[in-house]
Image (tube, rainbow, N blue to C red; front, side, top):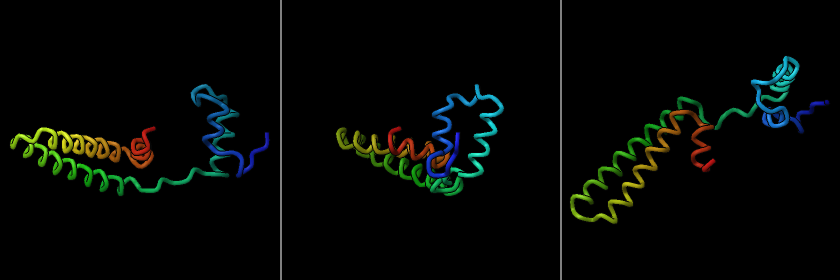
Length: 111
């Protein structure tokens, strides 16, 4: 099997060879060599940047929940429900961002 940079990636290698826990030594060596030749693209945001994004989402969730609570107290249940859903989504994004960009991207794209 000939490996070329334009046709082989680490993802394709895993797709072809299945579960890495069941790989033989030669497959592990091939995977490591492929990773040296064609390393994966680094994430768009670093872990530290993702923590800042997570904090922003958490602040947004708190603000939206505050508006929802105020609307509920005033009897505007429909509007409060919209704000509560927004707060829940912001909390989910904050949780995903804490895990790093690949997880955050997957949540945003619904993977």
